[in-house]
Image 1 (cartoon, rainbow, N blue to C red):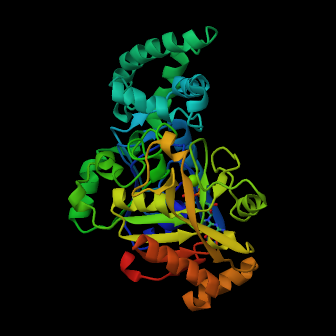
Image 2: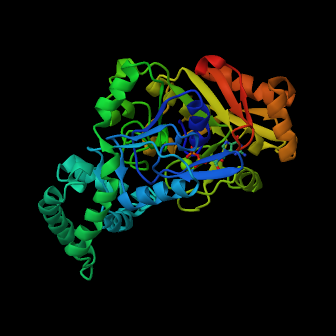
Image 3: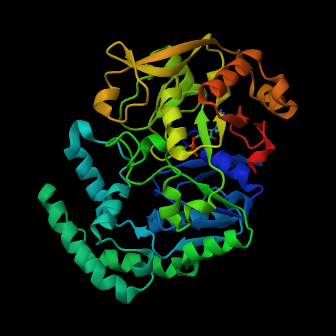
Length: 424
Ligand code: GDP
Ligand code: MG
C-alpha cells in the first residue's frame, strides 16, 4: 500500500485465500476497497477485505468507527448470505455526527492547506483520541459510561462548532439515543482484539493486516498536511493492533503501474493531458467513497523507494497494468532534480516537492486488448504478457531492487499472475 487505491482490496482478498484472519488497523470509512469475485462486486469502507471469503475479520483499535456505516456493511453482507465473522476492538474510537460537521468546517478554514478529506469525520475523531477526550467502542456499548462522557464531549464540540456556525444545534438527546442503539447492535462483536490477535498468531493462524490509504498519506511519513490522520502504512500495524513488530514477518507493498491521488497534495508526475484522461478512464479512477475523479500521473519510483525503506517492503505487487494499454510511450520517474542537482532521497516536505522536476525513463507501451483477452493472458501466465510490459516490469524491479510477487491485469480475482508463491 504505497499509493492509494492501488487495489489493496483485490489483493487482501487474494492473500486471504490462504489466511485465517484479516485485520484493518487504521483509518475508518474514508477507505474504499473493491473486490470482484465470482461475479459479485464488493465495496468495503470498514469491514476487512477478508469478508467475501468469510474469513475472521477484525477491526482493530487503530481504526475509527462510524457505527452507522459499520452496521450498514454488516447488513449488506447478510443480504448476500455471507457468514459474518467480525470482531470489533473495544478500544477503537467512535465517530459522532459533530466530527463530520467539524471535518467540513475545518477543511474550509484550512484553505490551500486542506487535505481534500472525505469529510467523514475521520480527522476530528483522531484529534479527539490524541486530546484524550474521545469515546471508544467500550463506551458506546455501555450506556451508563456513554452518557456522561458524551455529555462532556458534546458540550466541547458544540462550543467550537458554534464559533463557525452559530445556527448548529443537533441535540444531545437524539445523538445519545441513536448511539445507544448502535452500541446495543454492535455489542456482540466487541472484544479485546489485541489479545485475540496475539493468541491467533501464537496458535499458528495466518493473519493478513490490511492497510487503508497508503504510505504517501501517512500522518508521520507522508505528504503532511495533505494526508490522513493515521499511520496509513506498515508502521501503523503494531500500535493499531497490539501485535509486537517482531511478530510481523512479511511486508508486501502494492503499487499501481502509474500513480493516482484523491485529494490535495504535491504530485510531481501528475498528467493533465489526453493521456491522463485515457488512464483515468481505463483505470476507472473515480473515488470509491466520494466518486471524485482521481488525479493521475506516471509511476513515481523515487517516492515508492522511500516507501519501501519506511515499510521494509519484502515483495511488491503491481496492479492496473491493463489501464496503461494503448499509450505509445510510458514514462517512469526514477529520481527528482532540484536546482540542477539530483536528490539522494525523496523530499518529504511539500514546499520542496513542488519545486522538484521528475527525471524520467521512457518505455514503449503495449496495445489495447479486450477484457476477454486480458483474462486469457491471466490464465496462460507471465510468458503470454506483451514483451513491452515485461520490459517495463523488469525495469521497475531493477530500479526498486525488490522482487515482484504478483501482478494484476484486471479487477477480477482471476486477473492475477503470481510470480512468486513465497508470498503466502
Ligand atoms: P484500494 O483502496 O487499494 O482497495 O483500491 P480501490 O478499490 O479503491 O480502487 C482500485 C480499483 O481498481 C477497484 O475498482 C478495483 O476493482 C480495480 N482494480 C484492481 N486491480 C486492477 C487491475 O489490475 N486492473 C484494473 N483494470 N482494475 C483493477
Ligand atoms: Mg480505495
